[in-house]
Length: 150
Figure 1: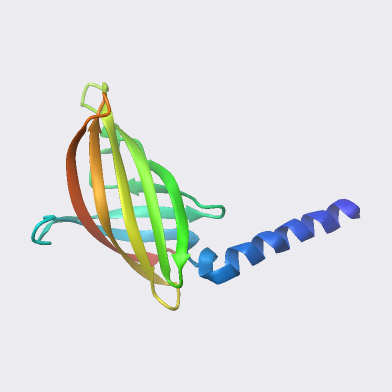
Figure 2: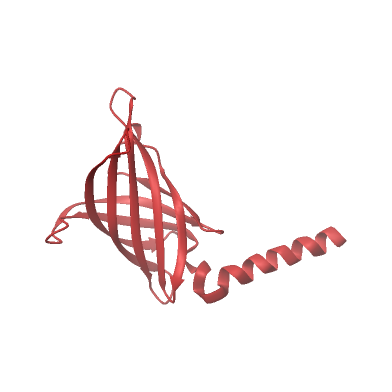
């Protein structure tokens, strides 16, 4: 009985922390449309679907159709509640060439605005591409629109 009460208290505490200040509203899985943009002009270059999952505790995973899965790992990262309907996330994926050789990694960082119903969000940010020696080789810009996967 004591174990059941303790477990119930932990679940209630997690729920309260999740709901505190709107922080848990981003949790869940999202259908995402990512648009790569020219960083100077904002002009759209290419758009493709992704799936992003934001988990309790501030971790996340991202899968994209923009790069063949044989050439990169899913993105793994962290997210945080900035305040109100604003969030921030950052994830890293490892990159490979067509022969399977590790070529470096990509770090994506975005700021998110969640709608008041927590059913859609938009975001904007950058992708930094590093070679296998950790040298930054490219910085790109992107935006997203997302709807909660139900």
